[in-house]
Each structure stands twice: as C-alpha cells, then as structure tokens.
Length: 422
Image (cartoon, rainbow, N blue to C red; front, top):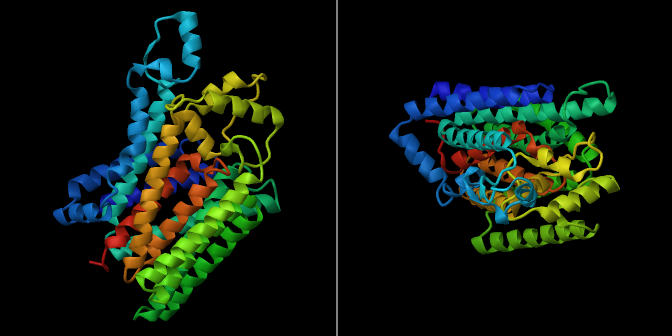
C-alpha cells in the first residue's frame, strides 16, 4: 500500500503545482499517477481494506459512478434527434447522421471521461490508503498546503500583477476557498493533539502553520475572489461551526435536527436572495459581470442545450458557433454552465445527486465520529463551498481542482468510519 500512497501524493501535487505554475502537462502526470495508485492499491489491498471501502461508501458507492456513466453514454451510438441542434444542421448539410455519438468532439469527451475516471480512482484509493491516521494527517497537510499555495498566488498577483501571472485566477479562487476549510481542519487537528499525550511544541507548530494558511486563504477568498465566492466560503464555515456546536454541546438528535433545519432554511433564504438579485437564465445569475454580447451568446447556447448536452469537455468547441467574432473564444463563466452545456440537464442533476449524497454521508459521519471528526467535517464544508461556487465561477473545471476535490472527499469518507492508527 506504500506505493499507492506515494502515487496518490504525487498525483495531487504534480497536477496542482504544475497547473498553478501555468504548465500544460500537469493533468497528464496527475492522471498517470492516479492510474498507478489504483493499480498498486488493487494488488496490495487486503480483505480488511475492501471491507473498510464498503463501509465508507455505504449507500453511496453506486452514486459515485454516475458522472463517468453519463459521459460514457455520450460516446455510445444513440438517436440524435434529441441531441444538440448542431446535429440537425449537419444532417441537413451532409445527411446520414441520424444515429451516432451525442458528443460533438470524440477526443474532448474521451479526455473528460479519463479525467472523471482518474478522479474516481483517486477517491477510491484515498478511502483505502488513509485508513491509517498518520497517513490521513499527511494527506490533509498536503491538501492544505496545495490550497494555501493557490491562495498565496492570488494574494501575490494582487500585490504585484507581474507575480504569479501564469496562475489561473479562477483556479486560485477555488483553492483559496478550499484552503480556508482545510487549514481550519489542520488547526483542529493541532488542538486535539494538544489535548492528548502528543508533543505540545509540535502541536503548536502545526496549529501556527494552519493559522497562517487559514489567514492567507481567507485574505484571498474574502478579499479578492468576488462576493459570491466569498459567500460560498461562508457557507462552508457555517457548516463547520454547526458540526462543532452540535458535538461540543452534545445536543440530542431532536435539538441537532432542529438546529440543522434552521441552518438549512437560512442558507436557502440567502441563496434565493442571491439568485433573485439579477435576471436572465438561472445558471448565469451568480457569475461576475460579463459583456452583453457574450451573455447573449451564452443564453443562446443554453437555450439550444438538450437533456444530453453537446458532449463533455466540448464547451469551447461548440461555443465557436455562437460568437460572431471568430477570434474571441466563448469560455464557460461557471462550472454549472459548462456542465449543462456539455452534459445537459441530466449531467447537472447527476452532479447534484453525487455531491448531495456525499455531503449527507460526510455530515452524519462527522457527527457520529468520535475522535478526528474534523476530517469529514472539513470535507463536507469543502463540498458545500464547491456546490455554491460552481455557479459563481469556472475554477472547478480545472483538472487540478477536480483531482484535489476527489481526494478531499475520499479522505472525509474514509475517516468517517475509520478508527485510530492501526
């Protein structure tokens, strides 16, 4: 299992660090490392590892493969009369295309399928590998460090635009929000260590590192990332606080349920207010201000989208159809917009079901967990953040963010049912 653990670390570090630096081959290295990690875990897994995986993914394991299945379905030959209108135009021009793959670009959709499979592989391997508490802690440190680096890149670019200019700002925004939750988990880890027989000096050092990371991430998330992204981070913080209050006060199930319902109602009211502040398609209401021509093109693109989309990963390719200026590519303003355009409303529904199912599993896991509840609590908070931020920006479309989120969820699911170090 050591090789799988090493490959897991290499996957998230290489994909994230290289993409923050502006390199184009980071995702390929990350996917190769993910495949190696899965292969190593498959050969070294024991019966106890398999049983742990089944417990960690109870009532959710089949939901996790929903997105890869949706992407694979777009590659299968289907009737195209319910697909994107571009097929009708092609059929009128060339004929004989009433039956075939839904996707407008087989290569781009295959690439999206491999990325989804790599994310699923990392999630599964993480669940098995981090059974041991020591490994779980190191993975948390690595994830918080990566997120902090992304946040610092955004901070430095604001101080001096020439610094970290190659780092994608939308990816840095996403990492900044994740960094707030992950560094809070590091601080809670340090606090739990200080309460036990662990070295006080080491606990203080870990806590200070988490504090510095949290401050850097908070500065980027709340000061430089836009209002809606900051609100998404606030939702994550509220969830962590909710879990902490329920656990510390040892509330009864009835009181905990009432408090959770009140928090859910409050979040619904805030989200309703945010979506009603602007008009137009609901998928474009939380995105930053965009030009009128671009907004009109996006509205036409969404209006033409059918239930099955135009093909995962094909947003930029199909977007060329909708802009009058051929030199100006149409970019996805948010992850939710890209999902609907690429995979249709079925794809967005599948992504929502997967996210909400994992969120509920992590939330209850954090409440039922004895020690180390901060692992599932931080993962649940990160999921809440990405659910809201997915409507506000395109940061989640970057492979580095997808792979890191998969590891975060896997870490939370594994430690929802794991015991202390074995």
